[in-house]
Length: 171
Length: 103
Figure (cartoon, rainbow over the protein chains, first blue to last red):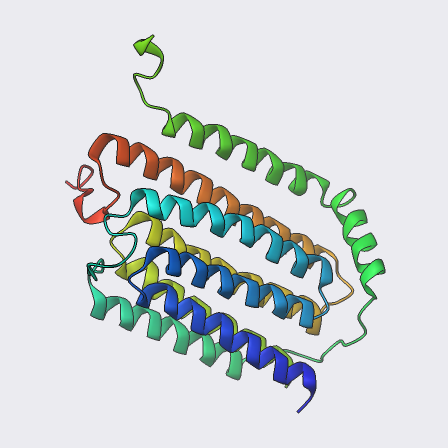
């Protein structure tokens, strides 16, 4: 067993464990922090798989996203501290079955599929980033620009939805 | 059989299962968004693993990861926009109470 496999298992286990904690804790801030740790563990897995740029991007992006999420949770939840230990779940049995079946089906595909030969000749980090840049500004430029436009549209749409309908008429 | 690929894909499968459970079982909109985030994280792990162990010479795979990250950001922005609108009009983001579109 190589060190890469051991660390992949460790951080993969951490990502899954913190993912479970998200739905097990009653405190919403703990929940948001657990999701942050889970996403950070995923980012570390990217670093272990030598995708340095994506790993750092994942950790930075998720740290910001989860901080915003924690603020929203405290704002919107009826019991953000979890002191009342409220149960905010429904159709638990069905959800457990759906999650379990999804997991087992994915595992079956993983173990039964023929993944073909491994290609372990990986370019170094500098070359990877340069290649990604060439890809983004070359062949995939249209898709990349579409993603940017999608984010802009979502930002405008989210702001429009969030603005109170009578906001302008008050003055 | 590539053991590292199998480990990464298994982690992705587990994250998908946990995320699916969360998205279906939670009644609060923000918690449902968290479940969807976990499902998308599973997709990210799979994409990076496929790139690393099967096609490390194809940079388009990394570009695909960037697109999924953009989808994650968009999903959060729109979800929170809806949450604010819902909270302002009904004072709660509990999805059990959101039955307006039910026939």
